[in-house]
Length: 212
Image 1 (cartoon, helix red, strand yellow):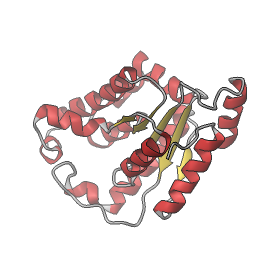
Image 2 (cartoon, rainbow, N blue to C red; image 1 turned 90 degrees about the horizontal axis):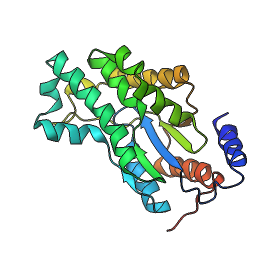
Image 3 (cartoon, helix red, strand yellow; image 1 turned 60 degrees about the horizontal axis):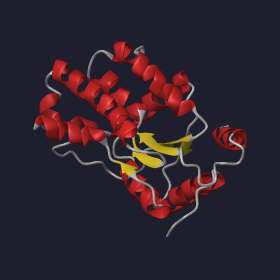
Image 4 (cartoon, helix red, strand yellow; image 1 turned 60 degrees about the vertical axis):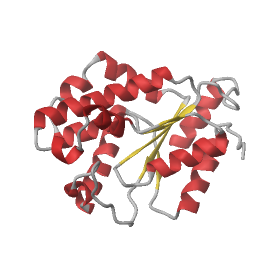
């Protein structure tokens, strides 16, 4: 279904998906799934600007570490809302085409660790953003967890390294996409080579051409 929607979108735009200047590519999913690695690979292969994960930049602004924020639900909620707003701002500041590390899946962490998801979800800003992810020129990859162990660090509390938490986040992202009607292409827990081949085939069907 996602591939059919993508191809339909290409037809709807009069065959302009080849070199389409408005194409936006997103990698979503749980932490530790390998999204950033794939985002960097797509950016290099297709010569696209990259929108880095906003969460770390927001932590830097606060001069705080996530394990410290997590002990205060109010601070965590404020942080996660700012991450989501920062994602939207980063996309607005970047002319398409681009490839982004995350999209609306940031909100799953607000649901998991904070409060106020309903207010954000029902806001006009969020509705407009979700609608943009449904557009034919948006390609959303859902990167599923793999077998490699995730380690805790200054940006990742020990609880987040638990495989059960990672699988829960993965399921919540899928639920969010289904609820919002966002077409997504699942990228399984295969080898890096297999993941890259699936992504390349999808993007080249959409009209992108490798520059490397």
